[in-house]
Image (cartoon, rainbow, N blue to C red; front, side, top):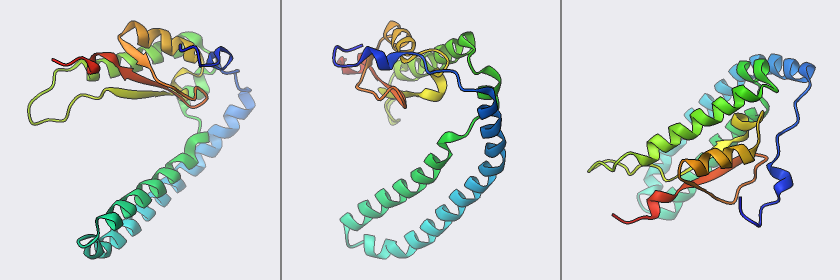
Length: 176
């Protein structure tokens, strides 16, 4: 951790009450299909509008960038509506430290495998930055994520640990 980070925020999230999780899970089962239908409907409308806007975009680069940003913000906003959803594994394993440790270990190992892969010609470079969301480390702490990630060669980036821990693959800064 960096000196500018407040160590008090890098602690484990409190365990949520069981009744709240069950209520949220039930609401998730009802709202998830609606959210998916909303996302698909908005995506279809934006696609159709984008076909007509393509004529304007042929003349104006700023319009195209603005429209793409608007599309990304709109569809991302719909996805963020589901941030309160509770999944079945979260319902079953709330407060289970070993489960969340294994989850963090798997997630960091996955990103490490991706980032350490050699660059292949004519393909995109391996990712050098990632974010581990709170959903993955709720049962442990952001400090545990940092410990595991630093042990595998990652550097910490400024993060809001109430949402995610941002990491940078330190080997990416070395020039071959």
